[in-house]
Length: 171
Image (cartoon, rainbow, N blue to C red; front, side, top):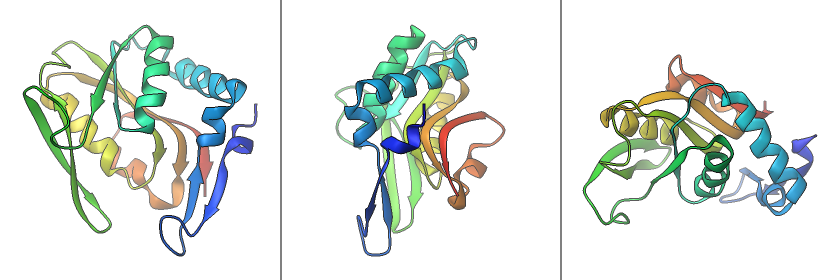
């Protein structure tokens, strides 16, 4: 299946000169969404994944479906102040400043084999922050899974030697 046909380019969003890769047509298509989840699951089916970590909002959508498909749990990584219990925090660099994600400290434990999931791999900061939270909690990062990778931003370089599966590449 050609997943690229489900991705829509939106010119000048969120600012002039940026071409936003809109995945909502893929999410809205039962066939496209199922194919994407199945393809991502196939990439990690034999890795003993026990948990997936995804950031809001599209990481929740993909992560929940992929966790179900892999028979694993799902752990949300959220913006600061959104989780009710004791959290760990990881900061990451944006083009215009610093942001951070939080995860409940007890949601990943030593021995967990964790897959990091998101819709797009751009600069790699968000994915690296999630990996940091997993490792801080004693979990093992099995790899990273993305629908789309913006190769020209070299985000993969921030993810070390961990395996990265991206279904669509944009040069």
